[in-house]
Length: 305
View 1 (tube, rainbow, N blue to C red):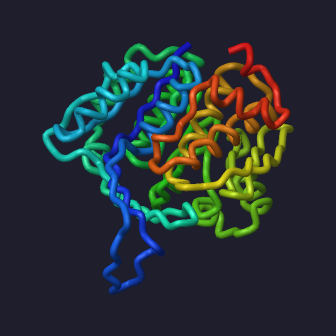
View 2: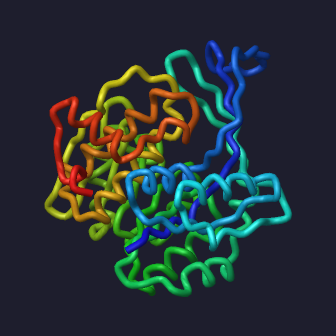
């Protein structure tokens, strides 16, 4: 069964800087690159690279047609993508020598999605089909309600966090994916276990995946709580690491892997991505991920995929 990613597509402008620019500071950069990006695009490429059948719905502007060509070349079905008259979403990204990033995001075409766009994309959706969404597109409340009516399995990444996330029907989704910043905004808690506990109380039927950056991640589901340490690599750029982790996690759900296997595989794929500059550039193939894990003494069902 394919995964439908109704997701963002962006053009990333990446600047290598000695440190993040301070208020009022004009900062020279040592390198500038343009990369395909957006949480949705990164997630779709990560899933497709690992062998999943992926359909991507959303919008780009005329300046983003090359993103559709890139996704199609990665065996992603882009037949539900449309081209808007306005600009494609884009991000200005500062990357430090430590591989940390700071991002300013412009939604562009991602924020012009309408109810009719959603109706068209979900017209042939089947019960049990996964829908992957992020907080970078418009009409999310209608999208979640429509998907749940069709009994789809909804995975929602609450980044980038905004106040209207609290008004979304999060109790209806299968998996809520957040980091510590988003967790604080939703709960006012800073301790990971308290974030998890607060969300589990509010949304009893929703599984929670809390990513902790270099510290790893915590998954809390029905009778299942797992901490997954991050796999260590020499990080060049962490941009898109969370997106890649989320895409790989959905692949594990799709394949019926155990939670431990899924979090381990996702951690490996996210770590590998961080070794190369660019949100999408370092995403590994399934064979590369299998080799990376095997070298670290970790084998699993992905070897049979």
